[in-house]
Every structure is written in structure tokens, then in C-alpha cells.
Length: 581
Image (cartoon, rainbow, N blue to C red; front, side):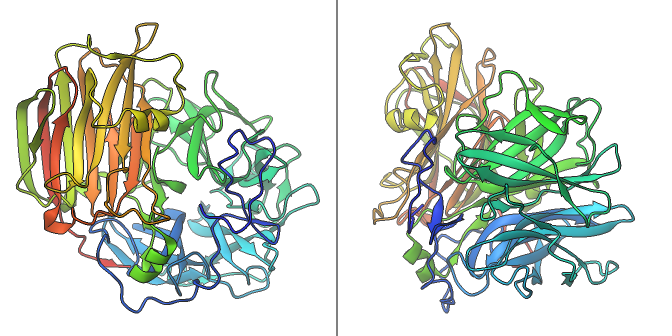
């Protein structure tokens, strides 16, 4: 992201990823444009606005905060600038829904108003306390130096079905950084969990020198909190940790678990948002309740090269437990990839991605993510393609639905793995994005590239390909690369336009010679789920030709091995009935 002043942590492994934003030496997480923060949008431009994703009618949004399910209603709180289309003037905006799809906007739940948050109400989480009492913990900014403290808020009337108004009691702040904590990198409290000793626990994101830290705090009454001597987790060389998330997942996979489930047939997930890279990473592991310590599983890669929720534009995510369907739901934010001044002109910036369910993969090595089932209620007209062969260089158009606002599920099959390209041992096995940029959709391969061309113009001046390419390493194991390549998504090439070749490897057994892909296409965003959610990639794109009715959708193959579309189902996607947000 563009920086006003840049500070390199000496031990960070990639010097070009200099994304600790400092203003007068103070850490913050967003590029600050004070001159643009309060320019209200007079005319909101509809071009590139999404049809079925969550976004306000105008202005800037970022992190999803404290999502929760309470008394039959889903609540989504989110960071919002009510005055402009860039980061600043942040409040906790509030919307409610009965189905995670149709949302009603309410007045902001929390906004700067007291000494303990007068310079900002930053991210946090919600916890349902015994007696069915919801409480929000959030980070307040108390001065111009970005000093951060942890506050709480409670509903004014808990019997109000929508919890319209929230109160910030005068005994805030609850937690203040001690002399051993960096008070300007001290934020984003998690949903609390209850220990066997009857004490509540939360963790906060922070850093100590170059070490990312997940600080641990404990309380018997949710008011008086004590910092544990040792953090829940930490890792050198990763810089500041933001928006940590810590929760259990069921090994059996039949139903998911409340955050306070800390024993049994479970694994724990530790998610961190790395300030330096702007990606969300996670590990699976064990929570040692006696030592209050999280231990990643053996073989887990922690930090920069670890597993990500999403290998594209996806950050500051937050999960919550939905007791109505015994599932855990994940919200993530996608920023714009166009220049800041374009955001000001169009009057809006940022979307929330489609909420996803998350479960443990049966291989116990990663999570699986999938759009919530409620999204399917928006499906309209359906078109199908069955048993269609694609030889080298062939593509077929998926016609009959509006390609700019669609949901596509496809299964590709192939007769042989013999033509898989050799995986060069000199390639970085962690750097899928670099490999994707070198081996794009137009570079002929053996087995692949094959996949979809989304948001494509008729003559392919613009398109965003989502595709697979299969390699074979020196041990004769197959390596599956998945790409969502925005490099040719737009003819617009102005300074500040970010068009990355996003990519991740897919840990999947392809002995059955099949690969599946689902893409959610919505004007300026393409969310893709490879192999039933093993690898997910989100791209933000801004086509100039492939817009509205001029957008096309194709399936293609540029490998020498013939690929068959075993089945393809594509739906037009309707707009939600209530999108007053």
C-alpha cells in the first residue's frame, strides 16, 4: 500500500514489503489521506459496484467487526467512514439480517465520543456471556499518537431484537498497555473463551521489535483483566499482528463448535493478519490449556509462507460461531485495487466478501471454505454444459446468463496425468504467485492451463482467467497450481492500479483425474474456490470493456492434454431484496 513514511523491520524477510505505515513515527494499518477523509460522495458511480456482495451505498469500509448470531438475528459490524471514500473517521457501522444475504442498515453501534476512543473506534469482537448477554470488545484510540486501549460496549436494551443502541460504560478502558507492550501496536481483541478455571480469555494482536505477538489476557468477571506473562503465540520476523482469531474446529467435521470449547476431539486454529503483507495466515494446532499456549502442529508452516484463508485480496477476517446451524462462519474484507483518487471520484471503496463456512479438511492439514448455503437463494436462470471436450487452444462460451453477475461451478476431468510439466526444483515451492505470473493462462502447458475466463470482453482485450496447471516434481508427486490472474483484467493502466497474478497451490489427490472450481463473479470481484474450497483466491478487477452486458464467460484449455468439462452449472445471480446498507 502507498506509504507516507516507511519503516523497515530489520528482520523482515522481504524488504519490498514495507507496509508498516507510520505517521510521525506511529504505527497504523492504512494509508492516511487526511485531505480526502471527509470528502463526501455527492454522486456515487455504479460502474464496478457489486450486485450481490455486501457494500455500503457509499464511502469507505474495511474490517468486519464482531459478527454474531443473537436471538435469531445475524449482526455484522464493520469499520466505516461515514464522511468519505478513504480510510478515516472510523465508526462501527451495523447491519442486521435473518439469512446472511439480505441486510438492513442501522445507525452506527459505536463511534468516537469519549476520552477512551475520541480518536477512533477500531476493530474488535463480540462475545455472548452467560445469561444471553452480548458484549463488544474493541480498540479505542485515545490520542493523536495512536495510543490504543481496549474498551467494551453493551446493548442499551437487550430485548431490542436488532440491538439498535450500544452503551460504552464509564469504567472504560478495560485494558491499557503496560510498559512491556507497544501501545501503538496493541489492538483487535478476539471473541473471548471460557477456561476450565472459570476465567475468560482473549488475545490481542501486537509486536515486539520484529516479533509478531498474540498477547493473552484473563478475567474472572469480564471487567478486570490481567495480562499473562507469556503470549498465547508469537513468531519472530513477522512484524505486527492484526485481527487475530482463535477458535476450535471439530476433527469429526459433523458440526462446528463454540469458541469456548477447548477440549475434546478438536484442533485449534490460530489466524493472524500480517500488517507487512496484508494477507491472512493460519495454522492448525493444539491449545495447551495448562500453559495457556498455542502449539502449531508438526509440519505446519507458521508465518510468511504459511497457509492463507485466501491467496488474493482478502484481509482482516473475523469468524463467529452460528449456533442455529452449528457452523463457523468467516467474513473477510476486500479492498479496492484501483488508485485512491478513483475511489474518491466513484464515491465508495471496499466490500465484504461472501461469508464462508469453514471446516477442517478430512486430511487434518488445512481448512475447507465454502460460500454459505444461503447464497444459493439468489440463483436465477441456470445454464448447463456436460461432457464437453476442450482440445489444446479451445475455448467455449457459457451463454444465456449475464456473465458480469454469476455463480459458476465446473468439474474438469482428463484421461491422463502423463503430460504434467516437470516442477523445476529451482522454483520456490512457496511462491505460487511468481509461478503464476510466469506461467499464465496463455502460456501453453501439458496438463493445463485450463479453467474459466471471467469478466472477458468478446475479443479478449480484457479477461480475468481462473485456472489450474498441473506439474510433477522430482519425487513424481503431482503439484497443482491454481491462479486468478488480474494482469489482463483491464485496459486501464494508470498509476496505482494493482493487477496481480494471485495464486496458491492446491493440496489435492488427483488420481481420479478431476478438479473442481467455483467462481462467484460480481462486476469487480471474482471469488474462486478450488477443489471444494481447499484453495481460495479473490481478485478485484476494473474492466473497461467487459462490463454489464458486454462481459463474457468462457471455459478454456491451453494444454496439450485434452480436458473435458464433465459438468458445468452457471446461474445468473439476483440482487438481495434488502440491500439498504
